[in-house]
Length: 327
DNA sequence: AAATAGCGCAACCGCGCGATA
DNA sequence: ATATCGCGCGGTTGCGCTATT
Image 1 (cartoon, rainbow, N blue to C red):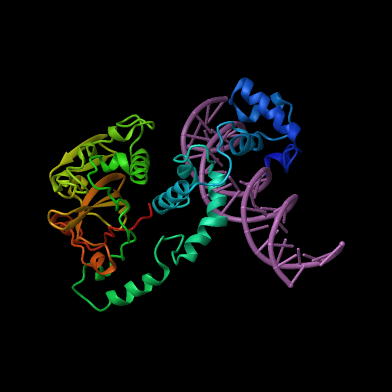
Image 2: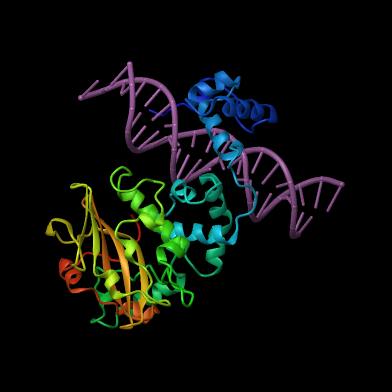
């Protein structure tokens, strides 16, 4: 049964808000605060539905809103978060103080989408539009290539998120690279209920187990940093670590329902390899894996990435797509 | 100057979810 | 167990401004 619009049902005002209406709503909320939205219109003397009032407050009247153009940093962050979260505008907005989901959504649809297309990047997949077909055709020519295994898609992470490191930097990547930290926090916030390990207001330094990812010297992360992986089990409500490269709950293999929701590669110039932390979900459990790769993330090198033994074993059923980014 | 097209943005709509009766 | 309500979210619409013809 189709629902009636709340406004139509109650014969309430629709359309643009007048300055008088804005003033009434603003005065009411600043005086009494946000409570039950359905009762706000009546109490504030407005011929609007509660939903309309809520939207007007959130998207326009709220005093903490940041007005004006998006900065380059905000733009970069939106693109980065969209790559990880997709069209989850509310989640994206939660990482941009003063910006609303509606604002970001509009900005994306009217501006960023076109910008990416212009750069030859598919705004949905964040993949180079041409390269996708090239990858497909080249992968058909080499049967030994890891990515040619038909179940494995070409990686969607074509560039390391954490890619530029200032020389002599001694700061943890979690602390210095905002997009990474934001993504990491966002993901953990999603997969772990806030009361278990992390508060939604957690700071970067409080992130579990990755706090020891301190940079040893300029631009190098020790491979020891990656000797432990973290597993989160929504069943056991426990956070554990393991020296194994791959953590899979209950010894079950990763199946086609597993989706990597993010990957974060670093250079390790000691052995000229590259590591990636990939997050995945399986049967209600969430985990993080280490993936080893080559020193350069060009197209050819991406194809030659080899999985650790554990992970390779885990993918014996041949259906795990390490780089799939959709949750 | 008028008509039209394109664009950005504010607001609406419908759906899903959780809380409550 | 079911119905209802309130809220939040993402998709869509349509208004109004500006540029172009």
